[in-house]
Length: 367
Image 1 (cartoon, rainbow, N blue to C red):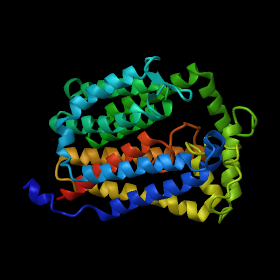
Image 2: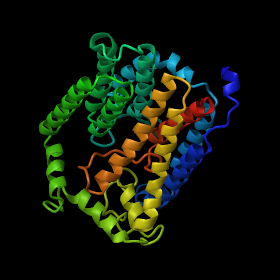
Image 3: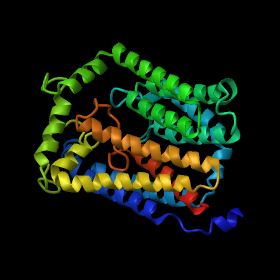
């Protein structure tokens, strides 16, 4: 029966929009990274060629994963979760993990950096989807159906928050909440989880002065434009300068050492400055199409694991894209999370493409 279902074609719309987002990301990175690449390495294309390698590897893996029965991830979800917990703990060890920025979130392998928290997103989705499939009917039994996966998810989130990477922790917590909602957990439990999560976030903000400063800057971006408000001020200047049609591809002014992290969480500001409102909206619509196609795959999945895994992967990529765009546009406080498929980062790009590959395999077994 499974072999027969595997003969169905993959979801072409989902495959096309995923490849399109990857191509858009490579194109924008080639422009956004030119200045910082030349200053650091004497060539305009250092980051672009590295991202091209990641993209090629990620697309190849996406194709391979799209041919692997997605039930494989269900069978291995618990061992993978235990492995990622160990790895997330090891990255906190100063002699093992490295901190190129403010967070100790990476392992260095030669000239490459691997970020375990990116893999944690996919692993946690597989674990929760597997749990709620195996425990179908026990979603409203708090002690046996809800508390165990909540504790495991909380441990993953806590390890990520300790790096500290609050942005990724918020993404993980949101995806966990949405998966619990999709699994029909009682609203009363969901309300309690949401309240606990907001309280934990409030504490995380209060114990770190720079996070409190980000909130104050969000409320008044002009308060300290040369200090804590510098990042969002320059981002809003880039977005506003783009107007309707933008300065043109490659013509960003802000990437010349004005805009912090032009290849990371600020790349959307460079896109808006160069492409303008109309064309950047078209790029945002690609994410909308990805979300719609991903939810369609989940809706037609042949079993509960496929449905929940599809929802989880789609929610993760969709919410992270929203969080990045909203933060860099001044709608939410800055979080430091990357824009999926677009920002520079091998772990982020490869894992997003792996997630898309799982969605494509689910689509091949659709009802």
